[in-house]
Length: 153
Image (cartoon, rainbow, N blue to C red; front, side):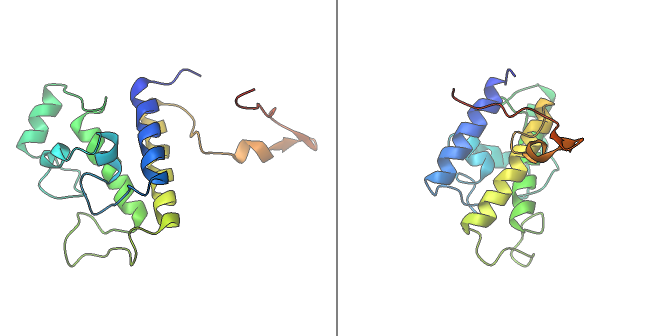
């Protein structure tokens, strides 16, 4: 399977951020999109509210002009962030009185949120979710339905 550069780069950056404890949903430089964009927070100017899917004037101009950031359009970035924040347990858009997780830096919570992001990134690439291992246990007539392919061999 050939993967796009934007997808490979995003997965690598999210992997490194997760394992280096550099994921923070409340920081525009350390959230999912902030990490994909090399800890840059300029993307936050595409919308008026963190977690919103509505492009503001700046975001709309970038979208209409077809500009991409890390390979993603302004709207795709807003969707990536919304998926991440929702999976973390935030009520969107983020406001001081909206629901939020008790511990937004909880490793398991962040793992699940990043898993949701990766599922969304796979949808954007029109590929099967790379984290879906359900095929490993699929069977037909008491035999495995798919062959296990080893990685790195």
